[in-house]
Amino acid sequence: MVIASASWMLGRAAVSPTQTPPTTSAILVARRSRAALVAMVITAAGSSEPGRAEPQLSQPPVDSGRMRSSLTPLGPPVSRDRVIATFPKWYTPEACLQLREHFHRQVSAACQRRNTGTVGLKLSKVVVVGDLYVGKTSLIHRFCKNVFDRDYKATIGVDFEIERFEIAGIPYSLQIWDTAGQEKFKCIASAYYRGAQVIITAFDLTDVQTLEHTRQWLEDALRENEAGSCFIFLVGTKKDLLSGAACEQVEAEAVHLAKEMQAEYWSVSAKTGENVKAFFSRVAALAFEQSVLQDLERRSSARLQVGDGELIRMEGSPPETQESKRPSSLGCC
Ligand SMILES: Nc1nc2c(ncn2[C@@H]2O[C@H](COP(=O)(O)OP(=O)(O)OP(=O)(O)O)[C@@H](O)[C@H]2O)c(=O)[nH]1
Image (cartoon, rainbow, N blue to C red):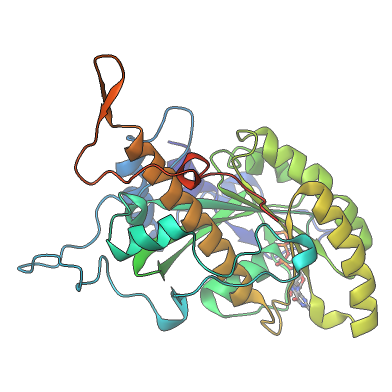
């Protein structure tokens, strides 16, 4: 029910960083546009592992009267710029989660056979954390709505967007959680860190203190998740405000920290849109690949063990290979 309550805490208030935000009662306003989504998420949330928020879409729309074949799409169409056919590239090879420029062999094969299990029906959780005013909301809004607002409206508690993709022909959705950077809302926001597949720690490229604070933000987010279960990104925002040389200097520092954090580094600008789509495409592709590999592994281990350990392969289960034994390994560069 965590997700249900989230819809009651969504909000942005038009206040400056120094102003007092509105009271809680003022923000207890459900967003009708989100109600349907929240309902879908709650419907399926009952099937999640206990203690782990793993929201799923209840059902994809059914293509009435037509049998699904390998030629029919698996879900409703997504906009063209959400179609990912080749593996998106890193920002810098010095701090990236993987150097491959193509999908994992098993993932490609599974996608071609449309044998990706429940991956297309799930929402993968992405949590964006970082100091107030660094541009978390602006980054999400640039990607999800293609807008940029110059006025600061503090996030109160949490907010989220759902973004649908088609990756290697398979539908895939990210649930992107925007959290409040203000200290007074931290206890609300941290309740939503759990079950994250991706943690994005954002800092302002023009304010080096916010980079230093990312360690603490990451530590807080990781505390709510299983060790080694999350992809970590370190993102420098407001790239448009820095000259080339100044940007390079901060980036060098950030890349150093990203390596320590075992994070992938990106510089972006929500104002100009620079790198925003490329960044989220990369996030989506990495999360998707991991989801498919985990699903293959789960189904592979569902093979029945009989007698003295002989295995019976169930129809549709993938062959076991060395790669399939380590599907969720992160940080391979
Ligand atoms: N020039 C420039 N300004 C930006 C950029 N991104 C955000 N801003 C501005 O920075 C301010 C803060 O942005 P927000 O996105 O609200 O920051 P936030 O991290 O979500 O803040 P909290 O909700 O308090 O945690 C706003 O005035 C934005 O217009 C950017 O890429 N370039």
